[in-house]
Amino acid sequence: MSNYTGMTNTVIVRRVVRWAFTTMLVVAASQIDGAGQVASNRCDGCRLQFDLAVDKNSYEVGEPVVLSISLTNVGASPVLLVHSSDVTGRSDGYQFDVFDERGNQIADPGRAAISLLKSIDGIASLAPGRSDERRLTLNYYMAPLKPGQYSIRGSFVTSQAEPPVHAESNQVIFRIEETSAERLQQRVSTLVREMDADPGGVAPLLGFTGDATAIPPLVDLLYQKNDGVGVAALDALLYLDRGNVEEALLNALKDRGPRANMIQFLVERVPSTLTKPSLIQALRSTNEDARAAAVEGLLLSSDPPDPALFTPLTAMLRDRSAAVRLKATSAIGGYANQQALTALRPLVLDADADVSEQATIAVGWIGDASPVGSDTRRDAIAVLRSVAQSGRGAISEQARTWLTNLGAQ
Image (cartoon, rainbow, N blue to C red; front, side, top):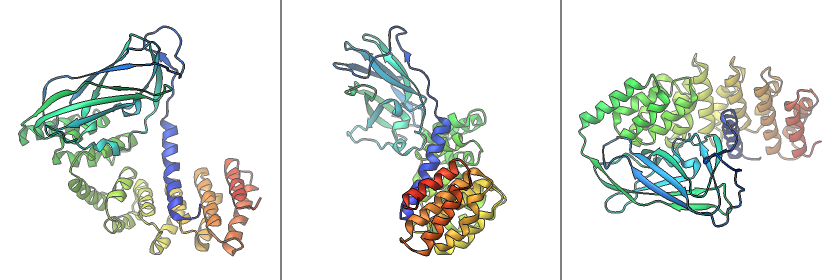
């Protein structure tokens, strides 16, 4: 890897993969019909019928639109279906398109949601003649709707069959009725009162209202310790006015400091000139979560790395928090020069295994980015050799892998 963008992507991938593995739950395949063997993936002549209905014909603005779904196997062979914990149904193969009276498709903010890294709970076999019944919330697939008439079309594909089995639903019509601002804000207030009991469940409902008064309580959820709640809040903010959301997050960043859940969201949407001053200030926070998030924010918002940030980021390598040091090793490794190597050298022996491993990886980045025969490359190889010979298990193996990549084994 020879450029900073690649290094940054590696850091992000490592974080996402670790999160995915810690949350993944895989359980045994089950039978929907409760009899027989689980079908083979080969599914010649398989056919599904997709029946769709709404729970009522009209809704208030921001009210959840609940879909009743029935997938019926009308073919001659069993069909394998994914049943996951993803409440939207996207991971299981469902997609819903919503259109206004003129036939214009309504935007789907949920496509950008970050909570779709959901675990697969199981795979079920749907026998011929049997149906799989589900209820899903349509609001995950559409921006908050104004009063008017709308139509829905659903589609389904199961990736567990070869070839894939597709099904298209019937079209369903529903209305959004005129709803007073007072009535909408009452809904928000009711949801806020329920937030303590089930913050992760209430967060999307606040987003579905489309009302600006839902933004402050969602921002509050970003400061909870529970990562799942923070992710749900960020996904909910996608359904609200982008300008209002960005302003609220920038104010929170300035007044309350950064948190991990909000950083990538902000970096992708707001110019770094607006976020960097607050992130630099947060490096001095007494809250270690804020310091770690600040380092990550400066890493993600500096491509190529900003020389002016080298000194404050290097100071974070000595932070008492391993989480902060871990982020800082990635940030300093991105500079890929002799100064960065000198700063990282002590970290390959850090008492925290994750910090030590990430520092070793960062030294590998520096060696890979340096010209063959240069002093920096030779010094990086020397550091990697010392780690390889240190007998530190996976960390030493990481060093040996980099030595092989650098042709120095």
